[in-house]
Amino acid sequence: MKKISISVFFVLLFSTVTAQKESLFNGIDLSGWNIHGTELWYVEDGLLVCESGPDQKYGYLSTEEYYDDFILTLEFKQEDNGNSGVFFRSTLEGTKISGWQVEVAPPGNDSGGVYESYGRGWLIKPEPKKDKVLKMGDWNKMKIKVVGDQVTTWLNGTKMISIQDEKIGKGKGSIALQIHDGGGIKVKWKNLNIKPL
Image (cartoon, rainbow, N blue to C red; front, top):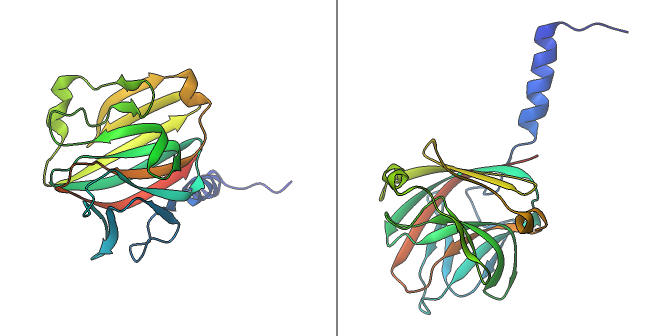
């Protein structure tokens, strides 16, 4: 059996790990995504933008692919009323969504917490003191790790929540970005990368 050096071994290992990471947004168009509802989803200057449309109702942009266990990293910038969210293991019928949302909202609205739409509501909220890590009107980095029934979120490097939930563990579905109803909302997104586990 041919021996390989330790350095070569770690190069091969690192290559294998990094190869799993994939971009969900190409910076050009919405390839790989589906629009749900009449709210606006478009690409501008290499950024993914969601904006309230004339109906001012809930809207979603979901991946065509399903993702079970993963680490998702992304950046968002809230302009105006930045009420939005990142859903995981979610399915949609029209604009009615089943699944779980990691909150993205203006200060004081529990960004990084997990909410179950059309179900149990809030499953967990971050400690109020952690709200200060959100940078309204500037770029924020979010990390979401989902493995089995365990969900952990980080915002700008701060761990926001960790929860273990049996129902989440049985969930299947896509990643979906949300725009809230009510109008006057605009959020920009970039560097959406996922690493299946």
